[in-house]
Image 1 (cartoon, rainbow, N blue to C red):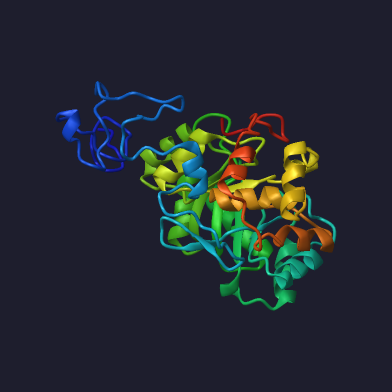
Image 2: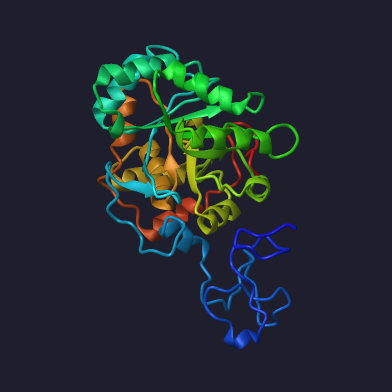
Length: 338
């Protein structure tokens, strides 16, 4: 029998559905599917639901119902549903094949504490070398790597760690779903890697909500992260809600749109208003959304620029202006998780 994550048969909702009169539905229960009290807004949320959140509410609170975080610092963290904590931003290393070790050493010395890589980036040996050069203790940085959809996930996890010369990764991701299905066997391979201490946590990248559900229903293991393309010009409101409801943190790759939208007039005006660059505004937008941006940089001045985002706060009205820039833009052509 198919069961939900809360054990109830026949549905994939995390919360139980209330089958009694709608006017006395307890807080924490989903309404019955045929509840006549439901009047939905354009986003599909029940206007009369006391737990309803608007889109801007979700962005202001980083995807949960806690007060907006107004003092994010470089040492802040995002709590994962397993209890571990992830730094609030990191360094992407795709195509970082020139002086990889030197860039990683510089980044760690500047205060970056999350490094994102993958088995197919060709950067892992240099990243390992840069980590060792920096002298930063293993407990003081967070390492993310990925395995490919064509790999044996367990073997690839071991191979990645050998290239990095590390005993474990903080997080290992499935880089993308396979051509067919959700990759349940790949996920089982990462679960084994986690059980054997090769990874503290496991997650996915470029996955849709439906594919994540398929993994969870097949294995009972919920990813801690979905790493996806994310910027004000291209994001998914549905994914933001889904991640918040399921305790999944969104890591945002290409948060700077691969430089393609930095001249947007709204973005430029806000950058001037707050004395920041357009790139810094994009990173700060991610931080205040509750997502973990992974901007890529190789030049010292860009490494410094990207991390200099903790002395500014974008008020709600300007966050809303940025939210309205969404046109499902993707530097890759289409957002792969939609």
